[in-house]
Length: 105
Image (tube, rainbow, N blue to C red):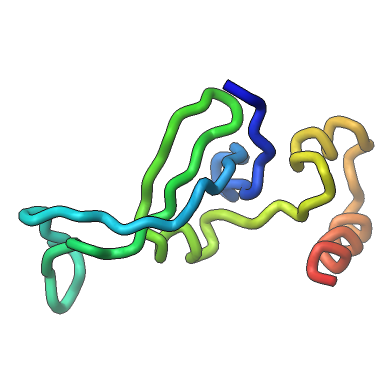
């Protein structure tokens, strides 16, 4: 398998993933029981399809969960966040704020 470039970072786990695309789930009988107040079928809901860059595991999750803040996009600077962190000293609080500003510009 070729080396994939991470596009997203999981906030809690610290792991990195390559978003492969957005798709739809097709399921005739799968029901989302916790969709309060109206549990219902999940057929044709959008999902994010992504791969762990460390072990190649393929993952699928509802698009809303992928975009709700659990993951953050990695700026496209030619290297994953892990590679950037490994090549630079640990940032101070001010440096972290500067990097966040750079990533949003």
